[in-house]
Length: 592
Image (cartoon, rainbow, N blue to C red; front, side, top):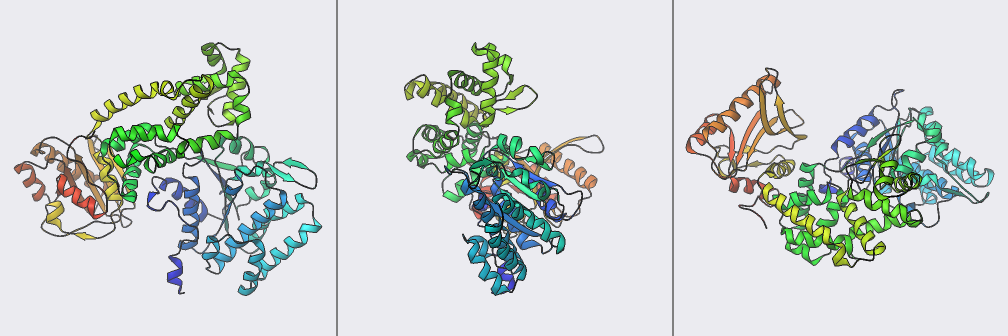
């Protein structure tokens, strides 16, 4: 296999593919971090967030990019995800084997361009013959020392040796290394079979986290456990922490459109807005709705169908989201079922998610002792249902789907209400949502345009067909797309809906108008003058301007656009562009 072909192989399977949305900031941040190795100012970092918010996808893409796009820094990928839900914790020997296997596998794959090694579940014993075949004495030595250590060292000594191996090899062999470790919080509960004790081995990473030759990039899905325990103690202050947030509105729309493309069903702006309102931008909630097993999903983009799918996902045993939340809270059943106070506090919090609360406020609201309220809040923080935001204050969950799940479980399990009675509050919420969405139609077209432009791939298209231009138009691959508006240096206020920039600094300035009437000359002249000013101030040299109006343009407006060399599209033309990239187009009218 030639080298060019090998570089195209991703060593770790990217399960998200085209559904990877809005994590470029994290990916670029950690890419820069890795490329600064070794640097005394470069500290270890932690990617923190709730489960299924995209952390692993970021780390997988980071590893693949480091593997294929540079040769100086050796990337190592080790995941403890398969130990997350085991009834028995990993042993010291499990850890030693997993850590050394991940390190050796990553080393051999990178040094000898064997990406297939990372795609397979390979045991440690299988790596030694590969090291022999490659003639690599270092890897053979690591394996031999590990085998000797199994009998010559205590489990603690074995753990220490494996943890510090990458640090020593990186500095001695001038081999900068990025240690990427997924689900690091698993290591807070490891069993030592020789002493019959459970212990936290994260403190053993003190030296490994401090080195600038092989710094660590760790992630964890149990936020309180990761931050409060795994990154506390001896590791306190040694990791810079980056919290991964749910998607904003624009990226929620984009992900909805991409799911529609991937699963071959129609979506529209009203549907995208409803999904945003229901999920708050949490990726797994969006995934649950868009890939539901509910038969009602066949009726998308009907908002009535979305309502039924939402109920299915949170209340039916076959719902992905119900299974997900049941699994998450199942780990903490004892904490959540001890005493009535915790359950009452939990329900009150999810009904008041935007309040900054403390034990005194909660105690007063639900009529319990302050001490009881404080103990309940501490339990709920441990299960990541509330977040501590001060010395004594907390904030409730921001995930709307989680909120509805907790409410439903409380009403059906604790208050013994029927499913129909438990869903009464949801019915009111859906009616309110439908009203908001109907008023919102037409204001989210930017999300469609953003999604379509993100799919541009450098192809040339007929200018007259799509953009009212006599010559062909090249649709470049953009490196960055963002909203751009504000005040320029002259103090004048301007508004441009989207700006997009390629890797070689070609710029598109885009205006989007979803009006009921054709666009007139005044608005077009305003766009021309504002973009002229922006081009002058920013010093853009390669600029394409595009005006999209749903209902097209008046004769004078169209003439002004043509004279200025500005691309213009009405709804059918834009939908034609969307279909080129397998997106469903914007609808002509309101949706149910």
